[in-house]
Length: 429
Image (cartoon, rainbow, N blue to C red; front, side, top):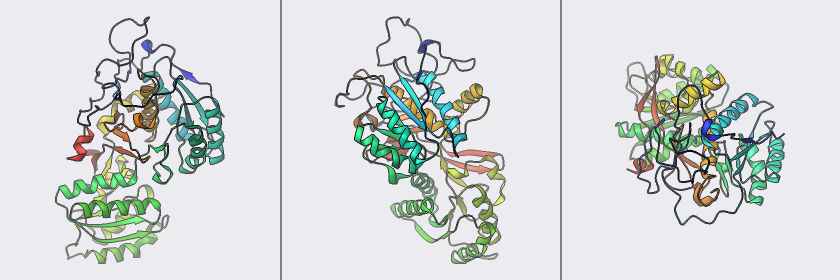
């Protein structure tokens, strides 16, 4: 079901809360070496010409400023207004998160978009069939770009329709198997999370690694990323194992076997310096005490996780205290959380920021001097963008790359162990 298109009534009157907000989703610089402006800092003047009726003065509240114009080599953009469709599960099993993502998208619309930008919102019903119907309606309505849907099965249903129409898709999934040929996945990729924390561990001198991962595609991706990062830096993977999901403490014998393989014992020293346990929720709460019981001691072995560890109370689990995982910087994300709470009265769930950044990206690319820039070359410019979750860029293969921080679990909550990079040039050095 489609909802009425959203337009900004007057971009010069948009306010959120009591203060003036300058949002930092901007071009990071065309050479790849430019630094990213910090959140809540005004950038250079907009490249798009101001409407004659708009008085001179400071940028509008919540404005998104470009670092500079797109490269002159960008291909011509077809004529037409920046009409963008947002596909979300507003009913069905995922309606709660879908509604929060819609709220975040509307926040971006009123903080970032100009008068010409139109966002139409379509309900997928949390199903592939619903997503396909929503995609058809969006394309029939003249959408120049589709944001969403959320699930990989929904993306697979929408992708052929969008490709046939030449409409790019920026989906919220983190399943890279549905990416490519005009479809980008915008979720935080498991492999990139593992790579970031493992490379940091190697830089801190940790040499020997083990892993306990779930027996599913997420676990396979995490294990593949661990092997690649360790091999790239001259470390060693000593032992790995996988466990069936949902067995809880019944995984005790498997954990005991893994502990013996890595030499953990009450009197011995483990043969590993770090262990990757990327699962979250109930799984990690069951595994961590079992691992500690079998002498995989966090005073001798550094526990490494994923963004599924992004729960402040998880640091109260003794076995996980001091553990590292990669994720968006809380320091960068905090202003967005504060604005969202001030408008909607509750904190945003983790996925809400993806909707905010994707709509902000569409709004910025929709007001380029030559017209909406939703072509592949413009969307995948190497300099990237700075969003409320930090630095990101869309890659030519349909994946994304992000500037993640390394975070540390403590009994007090989550702390920054290693800050997120301020440019993609930093990731290459």
